[in-house]
Length: 603
Image 1 (cartoon, rainbow, N blue to C red):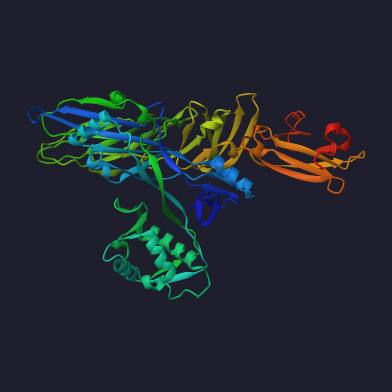
Image 2 (cartoon, helix red, strand yellow; image 1 turned 90 degrees about the horizontal axis):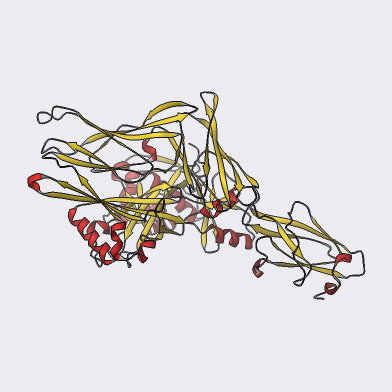
């Protein structure tokens, strides 16, 4: 398994008040977790949507249920963090650390008379690198409660989110042998019989006395910091024995580890703490579930409520809703669907039921009406099918066959028999340029490639790749709207990719060499320099003095765009700024060029 591109939990870096994590196997690269989740809908849709389904069940009357969908965008605060790192002299590349999923808990559910189901932990699914969503099925009573709450207004609803990310575990040159059953017994004792422990409490105990939890007998005293050892053990516990989960609603937001006794049978287990492995961690952050809906009049709630009539069935009905959690633009994927199958159930239903639903670009739920026998529970197998078109040739790929009993089925990218590689770009950068992308590799020994494009109105895509594609990379070219200038994205491994200005050559830290030739009697010269796009920002202008004794200097600045990576300079605040120049050529000055009003200024 390749760990390249994953966050490395052993190498956090403080940037201002935030922590960034080194990117494994990519020297000089660090990734920042999100700072918050904000409500965000796709394609100008509202971030919240309630799909109400109603069905006439004859003598049983009307049956209603709904699917509540919420969309979020992650905010990373990269611009501020990059400037803070540059100001602190930290020279490395910063990028976003996307989440793989997580949980959301709405606050004030009881006070606002919302459905009790919304007070539980709700699963968050990653739609793209910077977007997450949730979908929850509400029964008739809960649907009525939510519609009434929408009509009253939901201004005071807030939320807490926990985002899940897998990174490379902390590593130490040490091997340990222990009995998992003894660790489980110690966990029960520490948790007063409970199998869920606060992560911070467990870490503190591993720092103070790892032997009390079944570790430590073979640990050399003073060989490593207790904190590093505790983190190495915690990461492996979370990967092998326990699942990270949010803390309960009645305590401060945090993370706990829920242990699985079936994974901790008695015996001897040996851990090599130097071996890289993936370990999950949770990041608690604030979330705003409504965003622009806060300013929408309550009378306009119909804009987010959509009603669907389900055809009447006399008996044995089941309405299965299917929601695709997939990127909207899928390059090369011309058709996708989910296929559902229910085998015969004798004697009441002697026939097989087969149904399918298309998985289009929207995330709106599709519905399958299944006629079962009157008392039959819902139980079915399902599988995805995708048609990949490449150079005029179509291939069908089937996903793994899965079983389910749920009435609401969520279909994710990993449910397909091909690879979906999401790529997205920051909207601020797409205001400057369009991005042309190519994903290429080898398939059955022959070159294979596909192309896509990101622009203002289409900031995301996913490359659909056959599972046997090898050595796949993504490269690109950004072309400026203003003057058709272009900058290059160097080839990177074909994996989830989030692009911004700093992904392209030209953005980032820039350095200029400056020298002065004193060819008259001037004792010194004084100039002012600024990045080309920030000459009006006093905090980014730099005054530089050169003298006969110190006639050479250098100046560094942070270029926020590859298309505006140059600089301008002037002799004095009263002088005009120079044209935009590039730092590739050193700035060479002569004292005889100084305007006479600035000779010796500031002496």
